[in-house]
Length: 324
Image 1 (cartoon, helix red, strand yellow):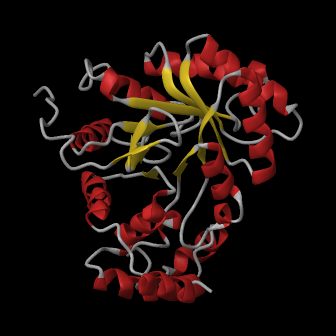
Image 2 (cartoon, rainbow, N blue to C red):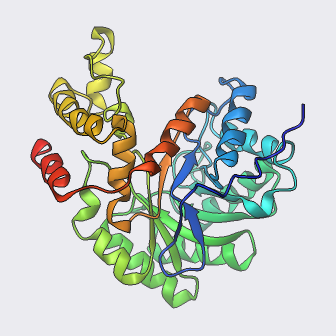
């Protein structure tokens, strides 16, 4: 049975302007870091993407190394774009990145012009696209001049392979430098993609203020702190996973705090995950939240976070007190 998008797909979704640009992002975007690879069932991937589109999620975020094996997320989204979503490309934003290890040899990672240009060419072939809407430098390269990395982003826009460019995982100092270089080149930095959650608030230490001053948008990832700020571990950590979860910051001490946060979520008539998403969107400084999904239900539940985005001063103070 062929897929036909819902005629009501734009009725409920909130769309936020990205900085001072003309572009808008859905408040919830679908991240394809996990659950989209050769080891995942293609039919499930297809259903998740199509359901997301039905709910007004127009933005699908990838990177060259996403999927198992690396690159398979782009292969999968390419298949979907050229089948179920064929004819809807102009309603959809596709973003990808390069910066992490992708292939053998000295040109397969980091931030050289050689790597970034070659990587995007490979990404476009995997997805069957002429261009992406946004292309990111996925991480700062300490061994390549920032002028070269940003020059590659400028070149990619001038070649018509990306409409906009951004950066991800850059600290404040290197963000400032990158933004100025791109400004001088005439290809402004559209967006910054950092990690951000109740337990991970590093962007509040100057980065958010700088981005706002410069008119650069923010889209954040890991709003639920890799499952910590969800119902997953509220009943405790499985003994056989304690060590592996500790490595990614999921500890009994933090889960105790998550339980207290869940009490606030219950009063707000939200799940803990929904409150985590809503919290990152508070105040309007974040344009969109990247949330992954391995089930249609997860997409639907994430979008329901938009039903209650307002926090009282008392709620915010209580959250801050818990997280001390």
